[in-house]
Length: 298
Image 1 (tube, rainbow, N blue to C red):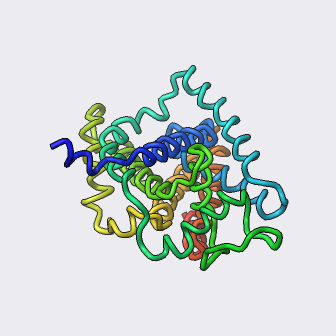
Image 2 (cartoon, helix red, strand yellow):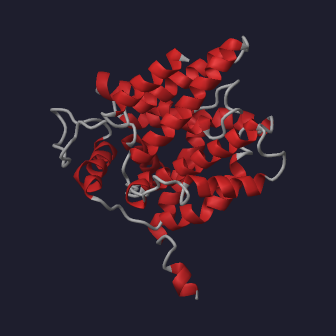
């Protein structure tokens, strides 16, 4: 019986990758803690932190010859202070995520043992991630040639390879797979939050609501295709960022209507999510224009 269970668990090296990915989640949560907005959308700080990381590394990689690593560790150090403050003040912003992540842990654990698959992973996503990990920056004339078919593809997803690999001390080839599972868990948390906000779900029942939301985010979701959602493809992150950006825009509009003091913070969150979205895939420009246009119309 144990041998059957063990066949689904990660290998020793993959446990290191899982630990490094979880450390990256904490780092992003610290970087993305914006007062006045973090408590309203569970998981939002993680996405905002990812946006901050992507903005800093993009500016460094495009406009300077400097290496990524010092800036990465600088951001990692900065992220510790918001995490300490949240712990000291017993912030509840992460509490709605607890049932989701506990119930979703088996999926995350099983996927930690998965290796990359699908053609696009091997033609550009993995080679692009390996390149910035090995060369500590983008492709330049004075750096080695890239083994990627498309070395100029957007890099926001690829930065997650860099983050997990720096924590692990080696290239974590299934890092994006683990991040995609986490984005699914954050989507479940978003669904649960919206159901709670609507008043359709009474207070309490957190674990039942989490279980239902997880089902809605995965096997009950008509567009949940494992070949895409549980690989290194960026379609999962695109979908989840669009969902969070749409709701963040709605919360910003509400804050403007009620002249809430959190209006600026919510506008900043909306802007950072749009900034994150634009550099996940080239085609995401269409989604960004649609979001901005729709929010402006509302």
